[in-house]
Length: 140
Image 1 (cartoon, rainbow, N blue to C red):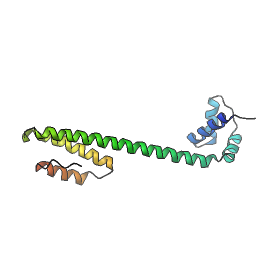
Image 2 (tube, one colour; image 1 turned 180 degrees about the horizontal axis):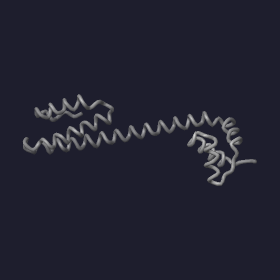
Image 3 (cartoon, rainbow, N blue to C red; image 1 turned 120 degrees about the horizontal axis):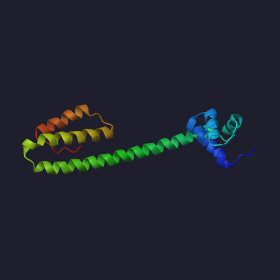
Image 4 (cartoon, rainbow, N blue to C red; image 1 turned 60 degrees about the horizontal axis):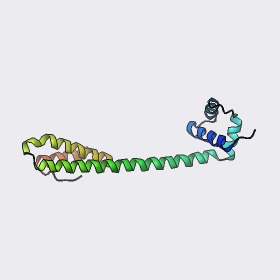
């Protein structure tokens, strides 16, 4: 039987998604596409599905890494902007009212460090010391 390129592509996608010719065949059956596992196996060899699957996984991984990096950069920028805004407010607030604000800023600093992949335990202690001594202008 002759199958269209669309069917072959659909079969390849199911193979990539499931990792199994049997599961790909079963999913295609649910969609009303009858293909034997033998045919899928022949296509896998003829069209180098395993190699193509690796390439697709690599592309997907690269795209995901890029999206995560963009998300982190965006979060860091927003946290930094919010931190700067809070620091401006701190300048006009009496020192007795700073405890709550300093905790918020310390939490922002921790989030920035986490997004950068840095440890937060030691750094948190350094930040707390600076805030307790009034050295509150350390941009992370």
